[in-house]
Length: 564
Picture 1: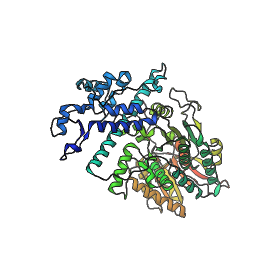
Picture 2: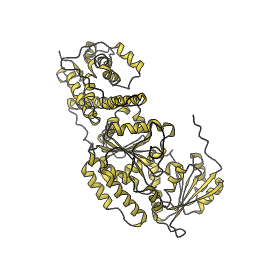
Picture 3: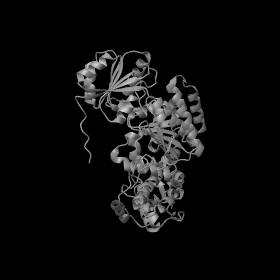
Picture 4: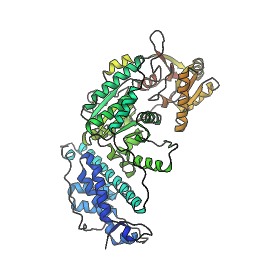
């Protein structure tokens, strides 16, 4: 009598999917994903055993209408633990948790103890792969071995759950005669390099800033043949980092057979702007913008479903996402997040505004980025104008310090001198009234303060002044885009603009003011804010073509940061 994995209610059993069919399809899918990290046999093993518990008569009865609640994930985990050796036992949790999350050791032991001991079917030959080299070569460093082992388990867990969900959905669509959504392109391709070249050829070449940007882009693209690994891209704000990182990613991927670009940014506003630039260069269908505030706009139901599926696994040539999405996925236990991990193997990963990585989580974040580069064939680029000291070469002393990072930019110190466009002046203590008066007196100015309440209060003080505008993280994504579009339009037309904002505008947002006022903050924040001032270098001020950044001490300073 056939053993089934999935039924079709109201349809004869002849059309159901057998356990062997399902196991082999999932094994092929998991092996294909795991092969990106040289772990194909591990993925195949997990695919073959993950649903062995469905052999139980009670589960087969459930497929035929029984209301009995029957678990089926513990049996495959038990099989791995008892017959798979030490390495098979290490992978048992991926099977036990393939419908929800990786279990902790106590929960895994409980799940296995309650599972039935089953003999594998005739079509399943249990061959346990040898542990990969990256686990064997850790030597006596048990902390490093532990980190690599848990990362490998979650990577393989992502391969299994991704393949299981995809193959199940594909079988159901096929069995029910449903049309599948049009496939999205899944890897970077030469046609995207052609599109990038056409875009670059159409850019303006006038002015000193554009000349520097062109030099940066050319130098970065010349570095694309470098072997995959760790890189830094240190370019002052306004120096063209976004396009340079995209050009490098495409050329580097073509040179080394890499699959995709994953662009990681700290703030939703930067993600939205970067995704817009990438879509303009490469086309709508190529770019996946993935964050909680994404507005699908005019997409129809099929396109929304296609984007949902791609977003679940980052299965797109170019992914633009937030640092929260990215780093949570690197350390998650739930399959919803771990499904993204296979897409990071052999990917170019750009960590934009790297200086914003939370200091309290730097060690695990650095360790994960190193593991992706060393063990999973990824290239990682720390991209910023104010490069933090995260590398051994920069003097950082910690076990997880990034080693061997290569700089992509042509002489960052000379670039900072060439792109100097702003004079900084300290105003000292300023009341809200004095700040508002300065803002009203300026024709075009950006004011940045450190909390939403003060920003709203200062906006109210200048609201009746022509061109007064307010920007806040409380706005929806669509509203922020609308405000920024209006601000850029008025700036370009030379009309009055007085923009009051929190720090969301200071990193990566493409605006160009002659005057920026900023409440006293860390040097990295001030450097980023300076990038919103005289961004294109077109001002003539004191015969030096400089804009002005005014720093003041507010009467409402930010609360102190309390650290553990």
